[in-house]
Amino acid sequence: MIPLRMILGILEAGFFPGCVYLISTWYRRYDLQKRYSIFYLIGCLASACSGILAFGIMQMDGVAGYRGWRWIFIIEGIITCLLGLGGYFLLVDFPGTSETRLHYQHNANVYEIARTRQPCGSSTNENAHSSSDRSTRTEMMPLSSHLI
Image 1: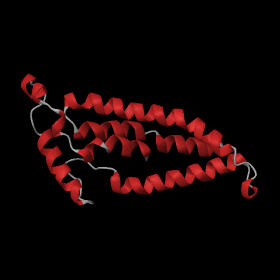
Image 2 (image 1 turned 90 degrees about the vertical axis):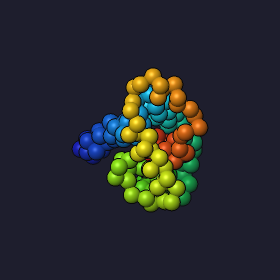
Image 3 (image 1 turned 90 degrees about the horizontal axis):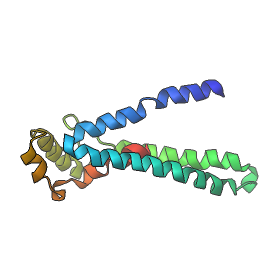
């Protein structure tokens, strides 16, 4: 089991920094703080709920002849596989290279590319930022990237 755990750790090692890097390619400097905090918050909430979920699944001990710990692996494995398949369609690529898998994604990509090419850091741009210029598609990016 120790070699399998080491392989899992090696494969997971680049996930979190990769997500942070991907988020940083989509947003300008003054937009990043909110996205990073949402990303960290989702991680905390997922960690908080995992123990409760495991306790609930553990109560299935004896159903279909399986022990409770096996049900945890079965159910959480199915959830992970479904989220992984969904993530293939929902997870966004880099702004300049993303292909349009869905019609509304193309509009979000064009909008975000134009937005990220604007100059960053000037006080006029930072004060002119409003909540109405956000794309719903890219607001969901931190959630979809963490769920995978």
